[in-house]
Image 1 (cartoon, rainbow, N blue to C red):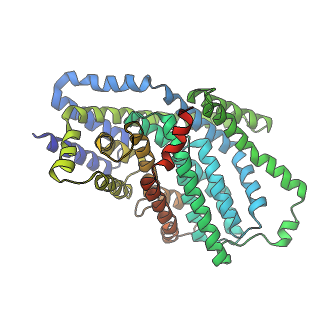
Image 2: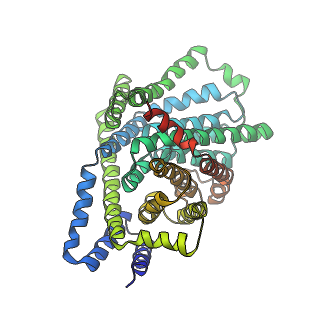
Image 3: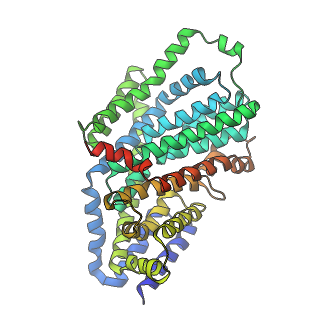
Length: 447
């Protein structure tokens, strides 16, 4: 059987199994094992063993449980709630101020956790009831929380970028630094949209009245400012030593965990129950991602053995005569289509064995050592768009689970339209101006 047909059979089998609702790592691993045994016999078992050893020896993987644990401690000890109270007091007098504060909250939560679901859970339980109680438009509210929570997979420490770095063999530290400027740019565009919409239509995001502002004593405002700055101090204690080269990435993650636990203990909120919940959930998330990475590495090994990547490259470049940028745009469009039905990890492990080596061979005018870092940011932004794209966008159904009954599925679908367009603008900007993603890692690692 030709290698192209074998690759097509592997992909179609994998998609059919996913439709049945099987777990992602189980489907990918099963297809990889069956394909390798069918093609190379019993000797192919070394593929899975080599993938496992490669995963166990990958030192940056130690950052994954550290950052996930830090995010759960932030959530369980209500440090994030203090942060939102600060935004409520200081941004409340501005039209749309609480929505702006919600975006800023999501940015900081993203910098503590790296998971979209964490931002969605915190935003829906803390910000959503308060925004609705203050008379904010329900479509504005749901769109803000869904878009803001998607920043968790772009702003470091992004767990999705950890997964991408393992599959693409790109340095995770450079990927994290590359995600900072595009992530902040997207957050700034969200805020700009909120400001403009609420200036045009103030009823969408009413400001706090003078009577409400008068009930907040100045001392309380400054106390909340101090409480809200605490998460910023935790982030700084972790990132400043890393950026200046005093610590490695793993050491920086340990500092972040220690600072978070210390802050929670000082506030007398770090209880045995908090420790148990954070540890159990961290173990579950970490094991899930490690199984996915192991399955993806095994799947990629089969593709390397088939030579399928060379075949796809020859099809696009030689047979069809497509330009490198046309190929890149088609890749991004395929991610958007798949994102309507699959989550980010499934998309990555399905197509990364094909796309990542192909991108590395395309002449896009970007230095060879930086192109996979840049493409990782493009992939992550595309995943953010896919998170909000009907009919099966991941964040759409998370919002349905958290939202009150008065917010319908139709409201949730229509609320994301302006934010999806903003994300598309950010994607185009990073494609046209690669230095938006590559400037910061270049500046840090050139020292």
